Length: 161
Image (cartoon, rainbow, N blue to C red):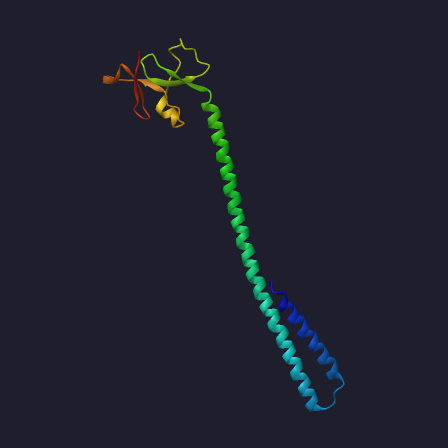
C-alpha cells in the first residue's frame, strides 16, 4: 500500500478546506472565481489520490483472495497426504505380521508369523506380490500346473512339495 497516496489526498483535502475558509470572506467575483478554481484543483488532486489508493486496495484484495484459495488447496493436499500416510502405516502394520519362509517345494513364500509350520492348511502368500505390498494367496494349480502353487495375480509358481 502506497502511503504517499493517502498523504497526498489528506494534503489536498486540507488545502481545499483552507481555500474554502478563505473564500468565505471574499466579496469580489474575480477573487471568488480564483478561489473556486483552486478549490476544484485541490479536490481533483484528492480524488485522484483516492482513486489510485482504491485501485491498489483492489489489487491487494485480489492477491489475498488468490492466496486464500492457494492456502485452501494446500490444506486439502495436506489432509490427503496425511490420510495416505495413515493408510501406509496401517498397511505396514498389517504386513509386519508376516514372515518369509522357504516352502517345502523349494520356493520362497510368506505366511503369518503366528502360523504353525506343520499346518498345511495355512495359506502361503506369493513372495513377489508381497514385496510389492500385496497379499496374494498361492493356489493349487490346475491342468499342467497341478504340481505347483500358482499366484493368480502375477503368475509366479513354486512346487507344492
